[in-house]
Length: 113
Ligand SMILES: [Zn+2]
Image (cartoon, rainbow, N blue to C red; front, side, top):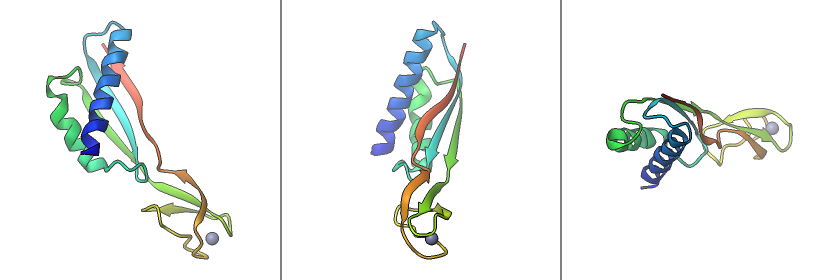
C-alpha cells in the first residue's frame, strides 16, 4: 500500500519537526496532495487516520488539500485541467508540453506546541 508508506513518511517528518522545535505535540498539519501526484487522496487520508493514533499526530488537526492537475498544451499553450495523466487539451486535443499543477505531495504547514 503506497498510501500507507506515504502516511508513515508524513508522520516521521512531523516527529522530526516537533523534535527540532522541542515540542511535545503537533497541533495541526496540512498536506497538499495533487491529483497527479500518484497518491490517492482518499486512501491517503484513511491511511493517515489509522496511523496517527499512536503517533505525534494523535491530537493534531489533519487537513488534506487536494490540488487539481493542470497542463499546458504543447500546440496552443492553453492551460487546462487534467483529471488524469493522459488528459489532452480541450481545444485542440493535443497532449500538454508540461504539467503545471497537481504533482505536488508535500506538507504545507505544521503547527507544533
Ligand atoms: Zn491546445
